[in-house]
Length: 251
Length: 380
Image (tube, one colour):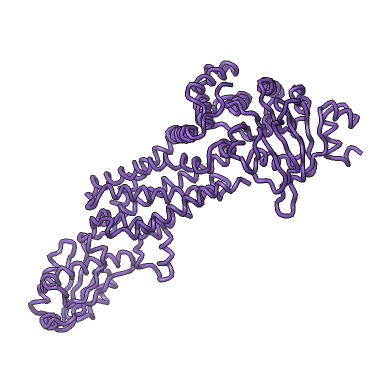
C-alpha cells in the first residue's frame, strides 16, 4: 500500500492547520499528507487535539488558520464537495437501531445519492460479505455489537468514498472482533479507499501503514510503525506512545 | 465502484426522500408514542369538553328591585324564563344580599337602580349592578357573563333600535357564542395545544435523540444540507399534525357539535402555518439542548406551557394583569387561537384574520431561518 503513496495527488493534504478556541490552541499548525489508498493512524492522548483536527477535516469545524484538502477539495471553501467524497464513522455507533439492516443501508445509500439499483446491489453484496443475509430485515438494535460495528463501517464506505474517517471505531469491542474489523479496513484500502483512523489501541497502530502521534495540538511524530519504534529505540508502538505522550514517565 | 455520487440536482431530491422515509420509519416503529399521539388529542377533546366545562347550569340568581314596575317585572320574567337561571329571591333592598351570599344561597345578584323602569322609558343610560360570588374567580366571571348576555337580550327586546339604554358591556367573544358553550371556546385552543405538542415536543425529542446517539453528526458529515435535515425532520410531523387536526375537529363536531362556520380549507391551511412555527421552535429547542430529557423539558416549558397558559385558550387575555398582556404577543398560539376561533365560531375569513395570519407567517419565516442557522453553527 505504501507503493501507492507515489500517486500524484495525496488524498489528504494538510498545511499549517490551526484551530483556536479563545486563548486555547487545540490544533497548533499541523502539516501532513496522506497518500491515496493508505491506512493512516491518527493517534494521541485524550485532549491532544485529535478530535478537533478530524472535525476540521470532515467539515464540521472551520479552521482558524491553515488549509486542508481532502479528496482534492478544500475543507474551508468546498465543504459540500468534501462531504460527497468522504465516509465517516463516529466513535458513537452511528446506525439507527430502530431501523432494519436493509433500511439503514437504503437510507445512507439514498443520502449519498446512489441509484435504487446500486443500493439493491450493494445491499446484496454487503449481506454476503458480512454474512448478514438472514438478518437483513432484522432491526439493527438486535445485532451483537461486533456486527453492528462492521455494518457501520460497511455503510460508511457504501458510496465508495475516496477517504473514510474512522473516529475510534473499535471502542468497546473484543480483540477478535477488532481483528475482523481491521480485515474489512484492509479490504477497503486495497480497493483504493484511503483510511484515516483514530484509535487508543496501540496494537491497532501497528496495523497502519503510517501513524502520526499528536501531543498538545502538535504532531510529535510521524512515520511507519517500524520507523517510529526504531527512532525511539523501543519494541512496541505502546512504548513509542508513552515516550511521547508522557515524557516524564519514560525518563 | 460504478456508483459514485449521482449528479447533485437529482441527488438532492433522492437524498431528502431517503431521509423523510427514514423519519417515517421512526414514527411508525415507535408504536407506543404514535398511539399516544393519536389517542391523546381525543381524550383531551373529551376532557375539555366534559370535565373542564366551565359553563354553569342552574345558576341561582337574586334580584333586587327597589321600585317594581312593568319594565322591571318584564326583566325579572326574562331572567326567570332563562333555563339556566333559577331566581332564588326577589327583594326591594340590597341589604338582604350580604346574608344570601354568605350562606351561599345565591350565585349572582342583579341589582336594579331605583326607578329602573322610568329611566329606561326616558331612554337614559341606566346602570345595573351585577354581583357575583367570585370565590372562584373564573366561575364568577362566567356567571356574570351569563347574566350580561341575558340583560343584553332584554335590552334588545325593550329597545329594538340601535344604542340601547342599559349600560352593559358584553365581551365580544361571547357575542358569537351566544349559548356560551365552553367546548366551542376550548376546541380551537385545543388544536393549538395538540399541534404544539406533536410538532414542537416531538421534533425536539426526535432531533435531540439523534444528537444524543451521535447519528446527527454522521448526517452533518453527509452531503445532506442543514435545510434538508430540518425538512426531513419537519415534513413527517407536519403530516402527523395535519391528521391530528382533522381528528380533533371531527371529534369535536361529533361529540359536542362544535361548529365550523368558516372555511375548513382556510382553517387547515392556518393549522399548517401554526405547525410550521411550532416545528421550528422544536428544532431550536433541540439545537440548544444536549439531551433528550433537556429537550423535552425545554419544549414543555418553552412551548407547551405558554400555549396552554398565555394563548387565551383557558384564561382570557383580557383578564390577565396589564404587564402580562403584551407578553402574549410572542406566543404563536395566541394568534392561532384568535384565527381558529374566528373561523370556527364566527365564520370569518382572511379579510378579517390577515393581521394574525401575517404575524404567524412572519414568525414562521424568522423561526425557520433561525432553526436552519442553528444547524449551520457547527456542533461543538
